[in-house]
Figure 1 (spheres, one colour):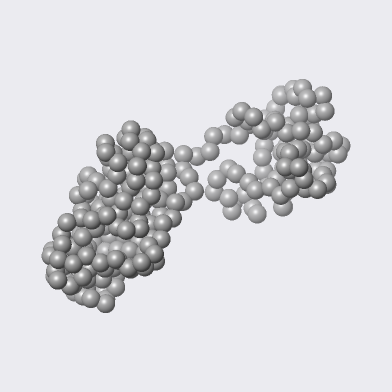
Figure 2 (cartoon, helix red, strand yellow):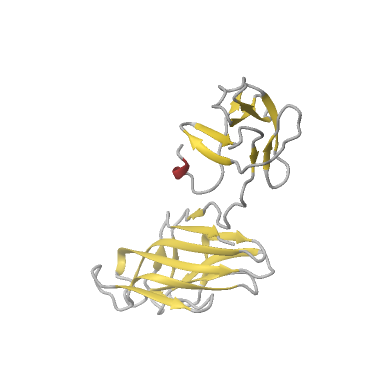
Length: 251
C-alpha cells in the first residue's frame, strides 16, 4: 500500500513469527511479534519493545532510555512502514492527532418503503445512524425514488433535541415531467424543514440526494431520514431497496 492510498494516518500491521529484515542505517522498522507485542528492529538487528502508551509512539533502545534530539518521520517504503531518525540514534515517533474526520458510516435500505396520501414527514424504516453529544456530522442520502407527478417528494433529517443544522435536496424540480428537466437544489435553513423534489410517475425512478450537516447538542441519539409526499396523492411515493446514506463525523 502506498501512503497516498491511505486517507487517514493509520496503518495495518501483520504479526510476525520472527523479526523482519533489518532496515537501512538510521531507521527502525515496526512490527508485531507472534504474541501480539509491538516491537521495532533497527539496522543492527536489535529488537526492542515499542511503547504505545500516551499520545506518541516511542521506539526504545535496549537501555530503555531514549534521548530525543531530532524529528523523526513515518513513511511507507515499498511494502514497509518505516520510522526514520535523522541522527541515526533513538527513533521517536511523534504522531499528530488524527483529523477530525472519520471513516464513513454507511447504511443501506434493506426493503422498499412507500407513503400514500400523506404529506406528514415520517421516519424512514432503515436510514438512520447514531451520533454522540456535541458531535458534528455530514450526511448524504442517495435515494432511488418514484411517485406520481402530482405527489412529488420531500425529505429532511431529524436529530436529537437541541441539534442544529441544515439539509438540501438535489433531484428533479417539482414541475419536472421528463428525465431531461433541470435538477433542483432547495436548501432549508433548519433541520426538519423539508425541501422537495419532483417525481416523474409511478415506475419512473429518479435519483434524489438529500445532503445535510448535523451540529449536535448535548443529547446523544439518532439522525433519521424523514420523508413524505409534497402533495397528497393516492399513488404511492416509494424509496427502493439499496438506497443508502453515507455519513462522516467531522468534529
